[in-house]
Amino acid sequence: MTNHLHQGDLPSGISFSGAVAVDTETMGLSVARDRLCVVQLSSGDGDSHVVQVSKPYDAPNLKALFSDPGLIKIFHFARFDLAMILKHLGVRCEPAYCTRTVSKLCRTNTDRHGLKDLCRDHLGIELSKQQQSSDWAAETLKPEQIEYAAADVLYLHRLKEEMDGLLDREGRRDLAEACFRFLPDRAALDVAGWPDEDIFAH
Image (cartoon, rainbow, N blue to C red):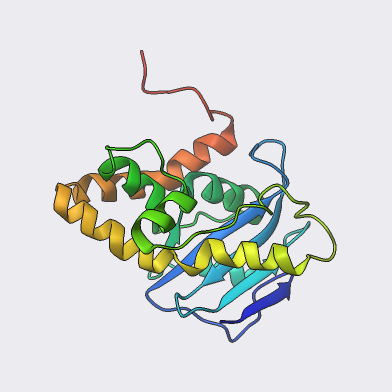
């Protein structure tokens, strides 16, 4: 298992096929206020690529990866990450798969849908969340920050397999795929200023 740290963009020559796990680290959880600091990626092989990004967000390789229609991007809570990618990198990231969305559709026996919960319940892995609120805009990331960022993508491929099994068991795959198709639009609404209002309500 190796965590690769990159500055500004994913280096040329690094490619992913089929599906790539993606997560972001930001200065906070407000799409309107906070900025994108780190993008982490994994092919599911135990290695991660942690990319520190900053204004003016000139990251053509990341942009190409996110806009590749033949590459599934696996997230946990894709709505937020997609909004941050759209706002700061200017690309619509799709197709997307969200393990949290599947958990909410299928794990209706619980209200615990965090990545830590899914990794524990389905993979027997305990994730540490101690670095969740650390300073992700720091010029130099601490080793424990890099490890934390990597952990958020290293297990998403395995979780997708588990979540796919739940979708088939509960007969909700079509519903999930409709949600996934809508996620980039839901993120665009967040960026445009409708993060809380249900525009479909009366």
